[in-house]
Image 1: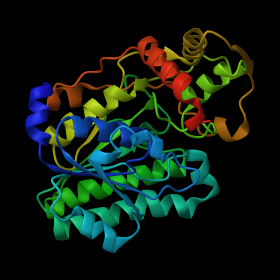
Image 2 (image 1 turned 180 degrees about the vertical axis):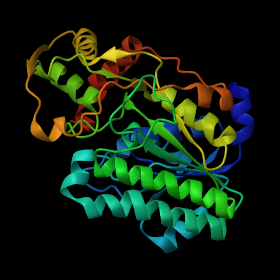
Image 3 (image 1 turned 135 degrees about the horizontal axis):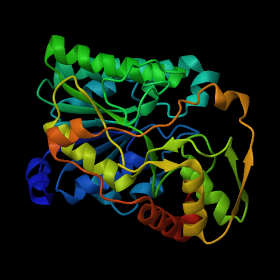
Length: 332
């Protein structure tokens, strides 16, 4: 689908974005507004997650903002009623935090999805919903590029609960006809990310360190491969998938580029114009969750939607650094 096709699908439609003040949610909301959608944002603005009102400063008067929690069953039932599309992005977003607070992660990434799906089943059976899942559902990677059929043996509670969410969507699609699907996101980066700590965005955190002239630590030999995907490509994939994805299915997205950790750090330092790097041993809590090299196979989403990534790491980093150079006070 091109821009005109997307506009036809979303113009005048009622869209709910949970976690809409966060990095992905706010970027998606802005695009939806541009496409003419009637956007409602739900966000609880919980610490230390990525919700930030500055993220929607340029569209604040064009969306309805609801300060609320995805665990509020009555509120969710009310919000989904009459809604055409739902992008469910709200949740606990740090895999190390999931280890420290397992029941919090289960509440948001498990029960939160169940509440949403029950509300849709009862109040909005025609709505289409997209769940933001993670590459961490795969666990140890056996072969790259990784297909959706790869084994799913998560190494973290975060990955386990994301996989649980995916299972809920498949179950509700099969048993109740709910039009829901899951998107497995690898390493996202771009403007509007949380920059106060390193838990959620390794690329964003490295950009901050480089901008402050600090030395970036690389764990191990730095040869581990990752799939870094820019926010505009993520948003574009979400819009295409919620329209054309199959009920109950899970889809990979990815950049199509195999990048080593060291190369990513070098590109960050180049984009910022300062900073340095050094190699250090793996901390214990990181090594236990190291999955091995990762690159997504995106043939499934390409076949369903014709979506393809457009932004290179070099260009994406340049845009990201420009954004934070102008808006650092709102993110540090």
